[in-house]
Image (cartoon, rainbow, N blue to C red; front, side, top):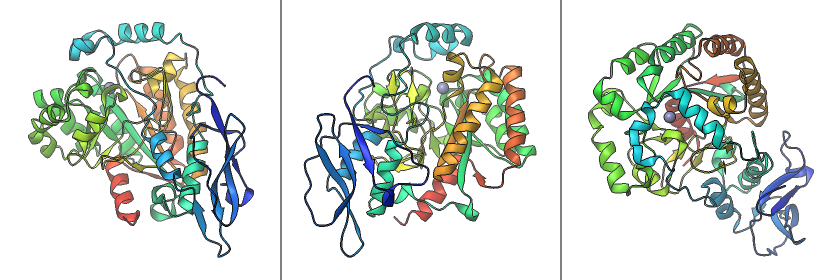
Length: 395
Ligand SMILES: [Zn+2]
């Protein structure tokens, strides 16, 4: 275990979700002792040796959670522990995207030589402790989104999403969306506002094949999230006509680079956000980050978060993964998310140097064919999932 000291989550069998194994580590939540009637069924063992009860069962059979637990869980979900800084190339703005993808990728690979610490919270590629914590809160009636029933009795949910950073990705994106449509699936394509304003023909073709269009930033620059909420909001409002025309409901931050100012600007403008990864390594915002959950959650700013819960294609390629290997890895993780009844959000880039590569396109189409044979999953664009969550969370 590296980084900050970790606390161990201990669960009685009575409260342990079926999918959940041992060795659930969290950052030390530093909760005060909580004395109350009833038997403790879950505890946090602090690095210093202290233990704090997290959940008690009363004589009436009802569950009560530690009074500070919800807030402590929210701090983890909101990644309060990381403070993104402007990356060194932010002044380049969108010019950065004009550097050929292969060169940008080579530069990132050189920067990613930092040790890959899978054990830091949230564990990579899939954390268990955060969802175990949310399960405890849901027993106490303090987290409705951690235990949602999905439509038609489906066991789990999958969103296929594509980030279209540059217009060079449009033709491969169309090929993906057509392959999905032939199998009765629909996905979400996140597109850059500036590109849409110049020409939304590409977006209209994708919509004709059933894709939802989401906004991938007003521009793809890495400086934007560090502006004030008003400045970010003004840039988004300038896109009003194109947002209306393409019925855009959701947002994904370029390079998943998020700040409080960005979320403040998204509130009231978008129905959902999908920018806070469940677990990520080597990203632009921080070397180790993530909300740790594979369930939706409400951000403090009032935006519904649908976390990208599977590692992105570029992360897997940085680790040296080939196309078939990446699909197998996603399928293995999807199986684990299915066991939780969670939300799998798959994200790829149809750029020529990433998932737009012919070998990756073919592997993706094979992956879709295997997926189409599953009966236990609801596959939906993110906007449909956001709508379902809002209608069924009883809030
Ligand atoms: Zn992007």
